[in-house]
Image (cartoon, rainbow, N blue to C red; front, side, top):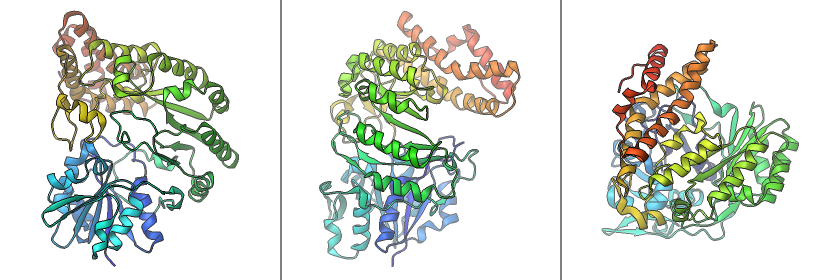
Length: 496
């Protein structure tokens, strides 16, 4: 029997105050392999503050015969540094996940240290890979990329005939987590579950843009997982992590009704599209009437031109219709936007920001919206059409080269402000949120929650009106002085 490790790699450069959710993808692979008699050790390093060398020594990772590593496009360069450390003559490194699925053989071309790449669903393919590793049968594994006779072979992925109900649910307790420095373990209260895979839509920037399948688990399968995992636990929330939970409204409503019946008092959240809300308001009004369910929308942009370029199949009117409905039917509405994209104009950015502001969606929980920049994933339709507007490696966060020079100035100023202040504001908000506050401290907290939006619009107005966007101009406002004073009092040390 080979000694096998599955690794969720560290997310470097990210502040981790909340323990990350259980890595479902790797968990499903581990569970499927176990059902076939193959044992894997699962490690979650996503929130670890240890460096790669310390992780390797602490868990003796190089001793494994097969090391499967999940891949994320924005962090893959960091992941390769870990792989370089783990790779020895006696072991095999295989990479799977979103980035592997998109890049395929490109990963083997660019990184000789990686032995194999697996595209698509990993449950069956990883099991077939490890069980046939010492035979010629390994070369027929669906989605496998490999080297043979100085050639790189890229096997196609076969999605036909897949029944995701046959994949055993993960055992969330059977995992080794290195995350001793987080301050809150949300996983003890929030149960993350996937009830479907894929998405039938065609958004050009999405990892699913070329695989428009949508596979749904049966209600019995979902409830069986809940019944097993909820025993002896104190979960208060269920978060459906599906790419698009409301593809089939009848199924979604029936599933929630069944869970409500068996687990009264548990709250729900899921994400969907604005057109699904706008076209199903009657049904959703009934679903949301109990007050235990919240919907998050992926708006992406409120510019008609940008939405068309993304092939979102929505419009600003549909977005507004959906938000108007949700603002009246749930206590808090969160939306996600892509504020910066290489081909955008200032008018496009203004349309999106005004949508947030006019609908009172300037939440601290989604303050990342004002910094969010489209990253063209290798292999996506967007990448194929517009990659010339981005610079940098496809294995990390690329940088846009904006068509509009004013947008470039805005982007540079916003990024500079973020680099100087975002982490420190986050620290101060966390500190003030954790204490019994005075009236003055309540005012300071409210200021900190809104200040990033205020600065963003200030810089946007400068670009719109005078074509200048210099962060030094903040010296002429009261924003910087007040921000520095609050952050200094709370304990930060900031300067522009």
